[in-house]
Structure formats: C-alpha cells, structure tokens
Length: 115
Image 1: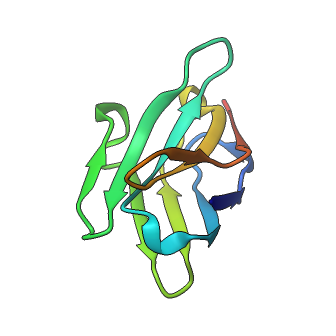
Image 2: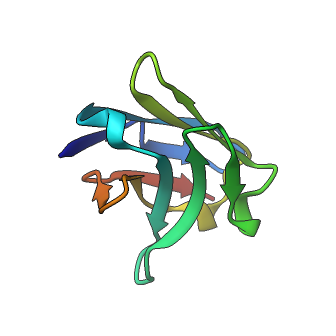
C-alpha cells in the first residue's frame, strides 16, 4: 500500500505561482510512476504531468512550458511547480502513483486562480 498526501494549494491571482507537494509513504519502493491530475469544476479528471522513476517526464499540452514536475526520492516527495497561472488552471489537483499492480491517489488539494 502507498499513501499520498498533497499540500500547497490555495488562492492565487492570475499570473502567480504555486508549488504543490505530495508526500508518499508506505511501500514506496514499488512505485514506478508518479504524477499529477486535476479536475476542473464540472469537468472530468485530466492528466497534468507524469514522471517515471528514471526521471522521464510527460506533460499535457495545456501546461507545457508552464508547469514543471519533479521528485525528490530522498524525501519521498513529488512536486508540481506551477507558473503563470490562469483562471482555467482552477481545479482540484490530485497526486497519483502507480506500481506494477495498481494506482494510488491522494485526497486532492484545491487550486483557485482569480482573474
């Protein structure tokens, strides 16, 4: 089992920045991929960014060159640096981790970008 706890969400004006964190605990050595998803109000959950254990990254087209995903393996923590935030980035952001058998999700952290 893997537990994921997000932090760092909040209210920010358009053009501002936030850094989300996700602390992993439990059987973390089984994790191969981690990432962030988001669910805007009234919409489906969507991929934001992924990072593999080897450090390869993948981003949704909508956040390329705006968001940066990274992980600190020594701290068992995943990050999402979000810059130049726009009102359309408003969403509940979820941390994601996967091993060879299943996916794990955090409880979510709300990001609200005011215009």
